[in-house]
Length: 175
Image (tube, rainbow, N blue to C red; front, side, top):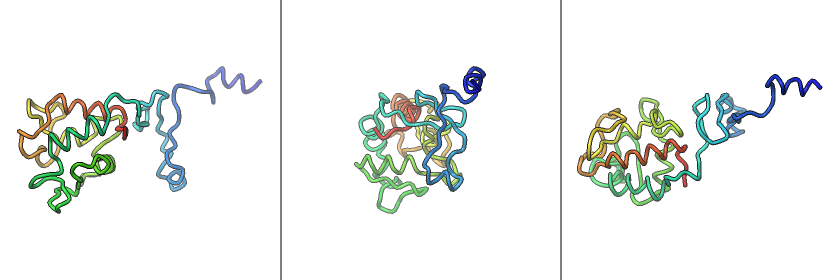
């Protein structure tokens, strides 16, 4: 009877939010289990964390990777992020390798301590404000030492930046 009373008051019963506990090995060390929540739809809850949506219409390998690798040429040319040792800021990408891009972009932390990609939070993702657009001003502003890519002719379009934004909003899934 006490259980039914608690449920009637909203204590301890299922809700729209699911606690996000993280990796159990990190919870024991005090890193995980920060109290953030994820809604059942996979979008960000009150704690700002989220679960990637693998059904996101924007696919990393098919949609995001070609923008960064082929259009923006992020891992090729002088002063870019290739494996030839010229990588500024410590961000090293392997040209033509979507797994390399995904792993590096989703784990990279800038010198400022900011995450480069913040799942479900395009506004906090420094990747977006580091890009310049070939056809206008990036709506995310400018946050890096110099907008990327170096040549505006190689920059993604505003529509392509929106594709990257949508992928991040879906939780930056490796889909």
